Structures are given as structure tokens and as C-alpha cells.
Image (cartoon, rainbow, N blue to C red; front, top):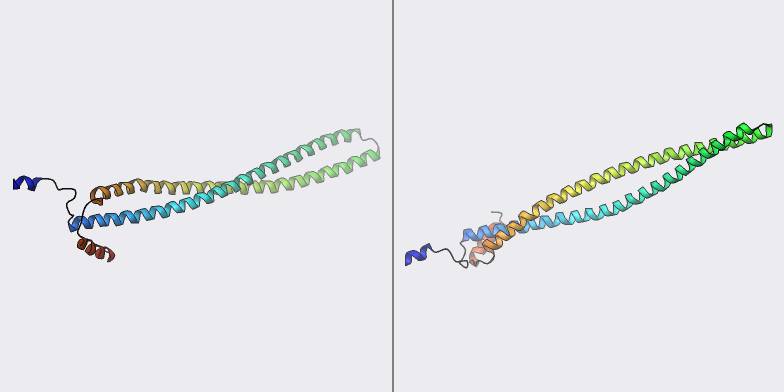
Length: 191
């Protein structure tokens, strides 16, 4: 009968050896360290995500302003075109010197208005290019944040598995307090 008792599997409440306790404590320490690192990274991701939301709103607002400015410039271009078309008809109808002088004054106003439109259009093109560059930089930032978040998420699953492994192997097992004290000293010393 003594032989069958020696071959029986260890009971779950069997006291851990110092080696088993050391392995469990190192695994627990590793789990806590990894959990803290993941939390720091998740907090950093959350901060970056919040900043991205603010920037996304600012980019959206700037896009709306650009669309509104484009509409104004398009309306101005169309108005100048209409005035120029009407001016052609006046040029053909102008017979007297007074009519020709009036035509000339009106033509100068349209030319000046068109020059102002060209300047406004060039500034707008610069603003539009700066916005495109801003959007590109924003998209790159979002891609980098998403890639970093994927690496965080990739670490969460294995960490959870390690926690379950610790709980299964160590969580409900008894140990000697004097062994725990020795191992804590070893761990504090970096062994």
C-alpha cells in the first residue's frame, strides 16, 4: 500500500517546494511588471488618441474653411468672367469717345479685380497645399499610433495567458513563509 501512495499525484494543496515557490514568485513579478508596462503604454495611447481627436476636429474645421474660401474664389472668378463677357459687348457698342472712355475705366476695374483675384488664388493655393501637408502628417501620425496600439494589443493576450498560468500553477497553493522571505530577499537583490 505504501507503494500506491508514492505513485499518487500530488494534491493541489501540497506545500510548494522552494524551487516551485521561486518560479511562482518570479512569474508573478514578471506578470506585474508586464501589466504595469502595458498600462503605461495604454495610457500613452489614450493620451495620443485624445490629442488626435482634437487635431482631427481642427483639421476638419480647416478643411471646411478651405471649402468655403474655394467657393468664394469660384464665385469671384465667375463674376469676373461675366463682367469680362459683358465688357466685350460694351467694347463693340462703344462708338463715342465718352463711351470708349467709360469702357476703358470699366476695363481697368475688371483688370484690377482680376489681379486681386489672382493674388488671392495664389495665397489660397499655398494655404491649400499647407493643409494637404497637414493632413498627410496627421494621417502618418494616426498610422503610427494605430501600429503602436496593435503592438500593445499583441502583448495583452500573452500576458493574460501568463496570469492564468500563474493562477493555475500557483494561486491556490500553500507555501512556507520562511521560503517566501528568502526568495523575496533574492528577488530584491536581483537574483
